[in-house]
Each structure stands twice: as C-alpha cells, then as structure tokens.
Amino acid sequence: MLTNYVYKLRPNVSQSEKMDNWVDMLRSHYNWCLNDRITQYNQQFIQGDYCDIRTKAEACPISCFVSKNGATGEPWKDGKLDKEGNLKNPRRSAGDIQITSLPMLKQARPWYADIDSTVLQQNVKRLDVAYKNFFEGRGFPQFKNRSNFTSFTYTVGIKVQGNKIYLPKIGWMRFHNSRLIPDGFTIKAVTVRKRQDGWYISVRIEDKSVPDYISKPLTEVEKVIGCDLGITKLVHLSDGHQIDNPKFATNKKTKHLLKVRQRRVSRKVKGSKNRKKVAKKVGRLHKRISDKRLAYQWYVANKIVSRNVDAIGLENLNVAGMLRRCKVKVDEKTGRFLKNGQSRKKGLNRSISDASWSELTSKIEYLAAKQGKVVIKVNPKHSSQECRNCKHIDAANREGEKFICVRCGHMDHADLGAAKTIRDRTLSLVREDFAKPSASTSKSSEGTVKRPKQRKETSARSMSKRVEPGNPSDRDIKAAMS
Ligand SMILES: [Zn+2]
Image (cartoon, rainbow, N blue to C red; front, side, top):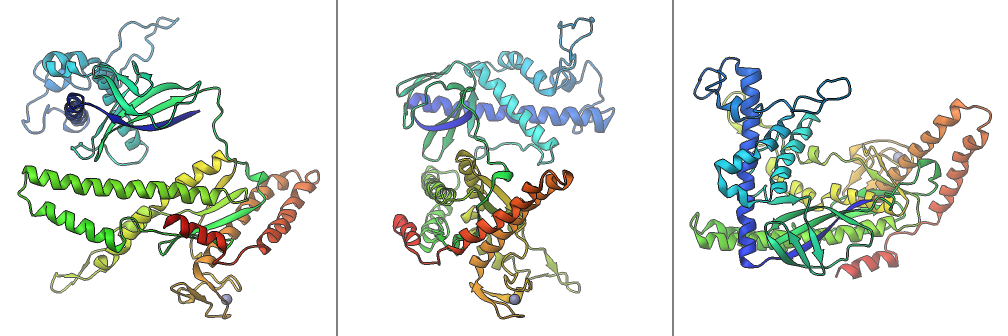
C-alpha cells in the first residue's frame, strides 16, 4: 500500500532561507526546460528552416543554440545493446535529455550545484508529468510563478530519527512528528512544500505486504444510501438525515474579514514591505479557512460512510461546468454589452467552490474503499425536479425546499426527494449489473436472476425503517459543529 503522511517542518532561519532559494532556482529551471521544449517543437515541426521565431535566424547545426543544448541535445543513448546487437530504445525522451544535460547546467550556473541532484532530476520529471497530462487531454503545461510553484521532491537519501529528518544538502531539520510512520513502511519520496504558515513535508510511504483498499464488488451490494449534495445543507441523505454546510469562506463574518484584510493589502504601496506583511495575513486567513474545511469534510465523509450500508450513491457532478461563466450578450445594434447574469451568478459560484463537492466526493470514495464499501456515481439529471409519485419532470415542481408536483400534487422535501431518487437510481444501476451476467447464462443462474428481487425486498424493508428529519443524530452533528 502507498500513502502519504504530511508533517509540519520546523526549519531554522538559514534552512528556511535556503529552501526559499531552492524553490526560486528550481522554478526558473522548470520554466527554462518548458521553454526549451516549446522552442524545440517549434523549430522541428512548425518553423521549418528557422531556428528561432524571434531572430528568424536560419537553422544550421553549428549556429543553432536549440539543437546544441536543447531538448534534442543528445538524442541517442550510448551502449546498451540487446542480444541481437540492436540498440535498446536508442532514442532519449525530452526528459532524459534534459536530465543528462544537468551537469552542463551546473557548470554554466555554479549556484545550481547547491541543489541536491535528485531534486533537480525530479524537477524535470515534474515537467514530464505535466506533458503526460497534456497528452491525455488536460491543459498544456504552464509557466510557473511564485504562487503556483512552491515545492520540490526528494527520492533518495532521506533519514528520519524521532522528530528530526535529514534532507540531503540541507541537513537535519526538526519537524512536528504528529503521526508515527507504521512499522514495515519504507519512505519512497519526500516533497517539501511552502504554505502560507510555513514549510510542510509530505512523506510518501509504502509497504508492499499490506494490500490496497478494495471496494466491494457490485454483486455483494444489498443496502444503498443516496446523497444529494447542496449548498443550504451540504448533504441530504436518503434516510432523512441532513448535514449542515458551515460555509467556511462564504459566511457573513468571514466574508467581511476577507474583505477588510484584502482592502488593507490594496491600499499599501505596491512592492512595499508593508504590503507583503498584510498580504501574508490574507494568505493565513485563506489557509485557516481551507484547514477548517478539510477537517469538516473528513468528519462528514466519515459520518456518511459509517452508515450501515454497502454502497453510497453520489451525484456525478460536473462542477467545472457549473462554475463556467455566463455567455457574453452583446446588443446587435449598438455593440454594447448587455446584462448576462454573471454578476448574479458570481455569489453562487463562490458558494459552489466553497462547498467543494468533488473534494468531499473523493474523501467519501477513499473512506468507503477503506471500510470495504463502494461508491456508485449516478447521473443527477432532474433528480430534484422529478416527482417521486408520478415521474413527472418539471422545473415548476420545485420552489426552494418545497416540492409540489404540478400534475399529481405530491408533496415532499425537495432535497430529500432528490436524495431518494439518487438512491433509487443507484439501486437500479446495481440491478442492471446483476442482470447482465445472468442473461448470458440463462437457466443455471436462476438464483442470481432472483437475487435482485430479493434485494429489492430487503432494501424496501430497510428503507421503511428510515428516520424522519430532525432526529437526534442530526442534532448531534449540529452540536459537534458548534
Ligand atoms: Zn407527480
């Protein structure tokens, strides 16, 4: 099993200065490598004859700085023949080339020799990961600035003794040993990261003898709970419980505090020390908010997963799509911009990001796997507009928390109804999964064909015992939060 433990570091002044320097140097190295790969690509595949698009210098093997030092510098690996006498994988990848040119970097810029060599290698590999993500359809690698490049990674040479850790080329450093690394686990990598209130390490540990957490197979699922994620209440469960949303960043008090602190920053002279000081305070407030949210999400995820169920039905939400800006509206005659509702939507967007449903979902998934349960994601389309009595779908069915069907007059709590709908959809998904294998083996699998029916009964029984909202355990949640 592979997991990460995070600790807070206690560097002394010189160590923390050194790490600051390293991060700056590594960031510029990262940006240099990225620029190198982009230039290289442009030269080879777009510009043809030209070496550099700015100078329009013609490419030739002697004058071209790109092909001499760049990502095609030494494209061929030496040695390593296989049994038939052919070179094995003779071509180097861009990452390999940039790693082999690291000694040249240290010659040209001797201050880079201060940095541990594996850290530099990992820095290039970080760019490799960014490119891999790009080729898998995510965005193109970004040039990094001080705010989005704050870490570096070690893979070898780390020692831990009590509350001290040895980081090569930095030395022994104290840290808050808040959580003991279990016996049998070995350290695979250590990432040092700067956050608003100091330095942290994330220690990647592995023990191959410990099996990974495995979710329950769908064939063993009997009891299901449905969750409807929202903003007025963070979660509505299909058994009637609801979990509050404390709105850590968007409640009135915090919003005011953020506004005041942010204003203090904007009134200081740009580039001044005073501005830096107050900006740090804003950063710390943001950190405190996110820490609170993190703790609460683990609490909520535990609360949901520890129910007596086998599977948890969640909505398959497209949060990025929900956060997208409204389309621009332009008056065709005058060419002026018209109101498009974005300013009205801004507050909602903030509430959505504050609730951070996808983070919560991933925590639920992790804990579910840990406890041998399974998370099933279902399509949430119209889950809160569909009548549970007559299946009529209409936006007019719903008004705030009230649900009144315009066709049959069925009344319900809107979010609770949505949670139940999600539970039903999850159940039908599980049943479909059952039906598939039984259809292929017709007679012998009578038992499995019947099983879905049995489960339907059991689930119906378990649902009939459900508790109505406002029960004691709901109060427990509130009490725990206050
Ligand atoms: Zn109805």
